[in-house]
Image (cartoon, rainbow, N blue to C red; front, side, top):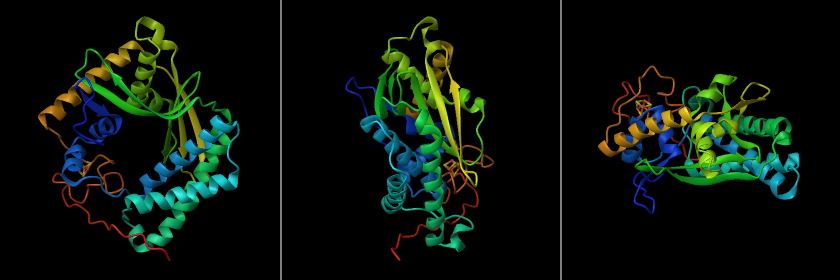
Amino acid sequence: MNLNEKTVSGKRVLHWSMIDMLERCPAQVENYAKYGPRPPAFVLIEGTVTHQAAAADLREKMERGRLMDMDVLDNLTVQALRSEIEMRGVRLIGPELSAGLKARTQEAETRVRALARCHHVELAPVIQPTGIEKSFLLDIPWASYAIAGTLDVEEIAGLRERKTRAKSAKQADAEKSNQITTYLLYRAASLGRLEGESVNDLVAHFDCLIKTKVPKAQTFETRRTLDDFHKLLARFGVYQKMLEAGIFPPCSEENWKCSPAYCGWADVCRFRRNPLTVAVPELVEE
Ligand code: SF4
């Protein structure tokens, strides 16, 4: 993520990953600029790897007309986990410190394999992908910024956004998602349907993989209105001003996202009292 990237027209690019940070906690942008990316905790790596495995499975379906064999998917998933840990490192937190890296890695392997299989069996058969992980840049004429993002899945019928979660999701999560609103805004703009009620027909599916002991899948259909797009852009306009002014307020320490599991800078953040020390181990082959 480049904080100062500009489009050819000289507009600043707001990447969805930066918008996500600003929505979670603006101080993360300051910490990112100061300390760079930090190794994620296992809970985040599991989500990333499940995402990669599901995308590879769907790409196979799009290109060859069938999903991967289960053993191929299993191998790909475990390899993706190992590569991710090797490339980005990993932070052990809380009880993971005493359990150790090897035990936690084995637990993660079992979990990501089960989550990728759950997607393969419950969600992938009903998805008809026409695009996977497509990057886009949306230049809104009346805004002083352009928005960049990556669509998980495109179908003829609409878009799909995938998440891995600890607990079951609700329809309200799909309705409130600013990420889905952003992607539907791109879809509406690219189809030339940014006027009147023509946006109401555009549909997105929010696909969730839940990390229960036996993982389960959920899907929620959702739509947006023109008014939703205006409110989203008003919100992004404020984010743009925060970036220009360099003002990045911290979220509350009571927020569950302000924790070593979900914030990579929890041990160095100038706003967090009593930061917990976390280990950043080297991955050692045993
Ligand atoms: S530790 Fe808390 S306040 Fe600091 S950047 Fe992370 S989430 Fe924000």
